[in-house]
Amino acid sequence: MNELVKALVAQLGVTDDQATKGSGLLFKAAKERLGGDFSKIEQALPGISRLIQAAPSASASASGGGLGAMLGGLASALGGGSASKLGSVAALAGGFSSLKLSPDMIGRFIPVILDTLKSKAGPDILKLLAGALK
Image (cartoon, rainbow, N blue to C red; front, side, top):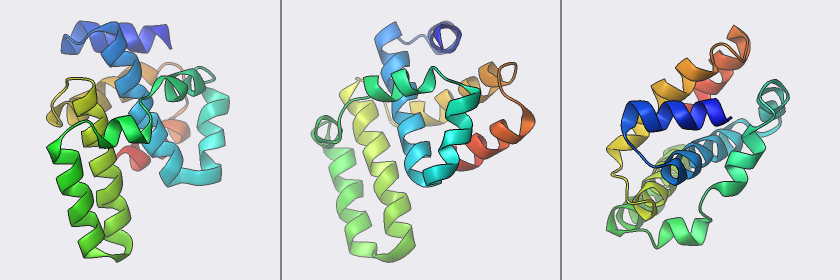
């Protein structure tokens, strides 16, 4: 996964720490969305578990800034399926904020991650991961 961190640093101008923890946050969100299917991704890309472990904790993410808290409150108010999706967006936004990254960086991380992992994972794994990151 060093290759992924290097690609994020080079293409987005983030630090190694931001690249590691930010990608960990995205993989953590994908794992929560995919449940047991995420094991297919972990088998194809064994270093992902280290990135997930490096991701800021939920409490650090929640305290990361007003946007995460605001989106979390909005998610609670909506209820149902959209609340869980908006809740994970709030967690990602809060997590990225705790890394001193703006929430728009979430959308900039995803294509770099998918492009970098193209050579390491087959098309089925990439499709599964891409669907979870949307």
